Structure formats: C-alpha cells, structure tokens
Amino acid sequence: MFRKILIISLIITTFSGCSLISKISQKLGITMPIEEQNKLYTQAIKTKDEKYCQKIKNKNTEKNCQYSVVFEQAKERHDPNHCANIFVAPIQGLCRESVITTTPLSTRS
Image (cartoon, helix red, strand yellow):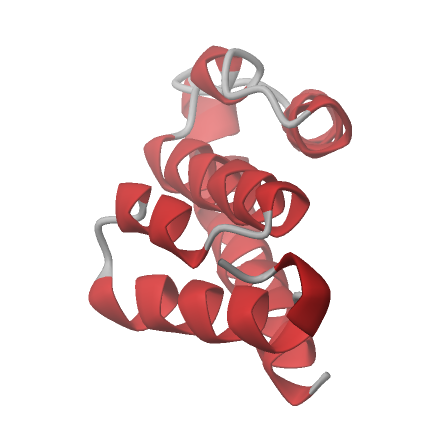
C-alpha cells in the first residue's frame, strides 16, 4: 500500500512540476495544453496502451505516462519482470516491489 502511494505521489509531483514548465512552453507555443495532456495520460492508463502517451507533446509527461502504462500492464499480468521496460532504476524497483506485493500467492510463478 505504501509503495502504491509512493508511486502515485511520484507521478503527481512530477506531473505538477511539469505544469509550470508546460505553462511556459505553452505560452511559447512549444507544447499542447495541460488539459489535453491529462486526457491522453488518463486514456493511456485506462486502456494500458502507450500509443496515447506518444501523442503527448511534452517529453517528461510522455515518459511518465509510459512508465505508468508499463506499471499498470505489469500489475495486470502479475509479472514483475515486465517492469524491466522502465529504464529508471528507482521507479523500476518500485514497480517490481509493488507488483510482487500486490500479486496473490496463487498466481505467482
């Protein structure tokens, strides 16, 4: 439970930290509005499909979206090895631990 909260907090703080950068970039015409990014991010999580992440025109948010999708896919498959698709070691470790601790013993291989 703690790890789940930690991962969600990490995503939220990263996402909110990007909001200031996004607002500045948006004013310069570099990126899409935050509302659109949020919709794509939410759709990616719901469908567990990274194609929505690729449409986000903000590299940090796009990467966080991809990590979130991989995490959701790993939880769904009960496969901590799927977390290897996250290339940031601390986040990968949290993903693995969270998947292991939330996977019922009967489904562990």
